[in-house]
Structure formats: C-alpha cells, structure tokens
Image 1 (spheres, helix red, strand yellow):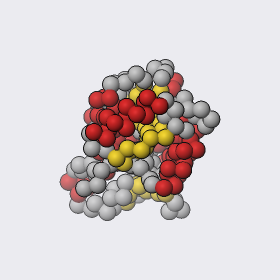
Image 2 (image 1 turned 120 degrees about the vertical axis):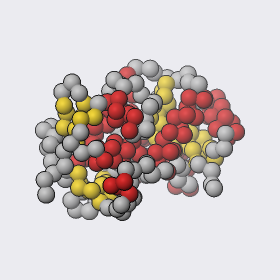
Image 3 (image 1 turned 90 degrees about the vertical axis):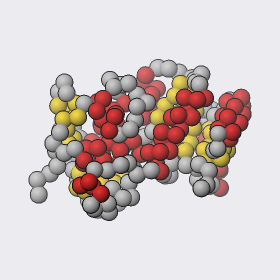
Length: 239
C-alpha cells in the first residue's frame, strides 16, 4: 500500500521542518515548499493526496491558492492559519477547503484531521442496503446527478462539478435520508465529520455551497430545504 502524499505549503521554515519530520515519522510521504510558485511547480511534478496550506503566504495568499487548487485538482485541502478569527475559517470553507486548523496547533490534532480528510477522500462511506443494491447508480439531486461510485457530481450537460470530500458525504447523507429533517448535529454524525461543534457554521457554509451547485435557484432552494429551528431536509424531485 503506497504512502499518502502530503504537500505542506508554508513560508515558515520551522513549520515546514516540524511537519515534514512529524508526519514523515507517522507514515506519510511529505514534501514542503514555501510559496505558491513552488507549490505549483511541485504539483506539476507530483500530485499529492492532501495539501496543508498556510493562509498568510507571501505573494498569492492561501485563499487564492485554495481556490485554484479546488478548481484544478482532486486533492484534500486543510488550511493553516495564525488567526483564530471565525471569518478566516468561513472564507477558507467557502473556497472549498476540507478543514481548517489555527496555529499554534497540536501536531496530534492536525494528524487526526489529516486522517479524517483522507478517509473521506479514499474510503467510500458505508451505505444503507438501498444504495448497496445499485452501487453504480447516478442519483438525480436538483439540477445535477450524483455518481455514488465515483464520488462525483455532474451537471445537466454531463460536465463534472467540483466537489469536496465533505460535500460528497453531505449529499450522500441527504440522498440516503430523503424527506427527513436532519439537524446539524445529525448531519455531522452521519457524514462522519466530528471536527466541528454541532452549532458551528461550517455545515451552513457547506450547504450554501451545495445549493449553488445543485439548485436551479440557490436563493430559493427546493431540493435542500431549510427547516427553521430544526435543520435541513432533502426533497427529491417528483418523477
């Protein structure tokens, strides 16, 4: 079994050294660079499984680079930042980061978050019997189709719509629980993402992103509906 490949992008030499040594000692193949240009050069040589991306890079900042990564490559993204401000986490999630951790962080917590993101990227989620009967099925969800086997979303023209691992897990949860009101806490549990608190805005941000992708009118969602004071509900289209 090949080692999971991690690319660290951080302008702090000490952070690069510590993460390269720590993660390398825990079974990961790690490469570290100091800025966006070096990141892009490394991506041309080898595509990692996951990028640890510093928010406050010189030149192109982490938000810009995260947006580029999400548009071009099927990799996991964890944002690293010296700020604990919620707005930084919100912006990071809005551009498609899979997770976020503030500096200074415990390397053990970072490793747990890495394992969680890689698990979502690499291991198909357990599915109820209805899904297992047709593992290659495409499920219509709003104006798109969700390919359960490929972990991919396609628009009406057959073009693939960029989707993070967490976004796929959320769509899978909705598809497996149609017409059921799911609280934020229940969504976190079913999607196997316990890295956020139940009332953290991460779920709301990700659902807003999903609505932009699957709804005909994201401002008036008909597929992923808000149930005020209770959570969200997936309503399949009538055939």
